[in-house]
Length: 343
Image (tube, rainbow, N blue to C red; front, side):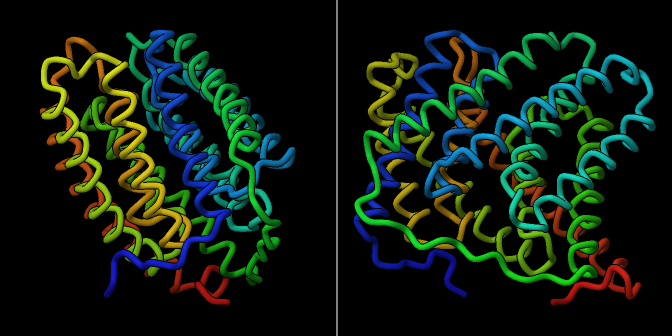
């Protein structure tokens, strides 16, 4: 099986590559200059917007803002009222994941559901710790999305498409398949949340994001296919992060030197992402790994080499466990006619 597929790039594709790399670099620069504690919202969100959405529109903007605001309200309520009751939190998390995956399955609100799943899971996990500053967390999430939207719109002005794009067509799905996809995604996402809570995996943000990204195809075959690509992309992302560290050595925290290299590797990954023409593959996995690595873990007192190796190993474990959970839930749902996967 060929893990990286190459399709001829058009002028529009080149413009999108420049939008992704420059937008991610601007978000990364903003988070470091302002000293935000959760820089991942400023670095990875522009990658998500510019990488998975070819053209920004008001419909996309409304989905992103709505997903962020709803996640903030839900996390604030759950953490404030049920913070000391893990069973209740897990049940509520399942319900919240369920309606988000239902939106993803319908297609028209895919970005609302996908962005909401990631924001909800990350914030709910961090908010469960007593020493977490909840105000700082929700502040970074909200403004991270606002800044990312502003960056995405700016990139559309600076690097506009050369020619009009064809409107995407949503595949038709039966009600059984949509129920299957929503229940599969919500079940595995809730299991992931519970696992990270039980084992106190506070420093495994990359692995947590991986368990959710694997669910975006919303079926077993898609998750298995993406797992291979995610594994390869993670290795490439970590390798590029280590290469930057070796090149800069003691100057790795100097933004003037770091930013051009971050932009260059983001551009290479975005080119691979666009060439694959499959939504989320090796290129996007490598790019998001690099974004999480530098957006969240680059601090003066942090050993980025150890962080890189730790995240690579934790992602591999997360991929295996998520695939096992996906297969078990997929097999269980296929036993019932109402939730059997099909067209």
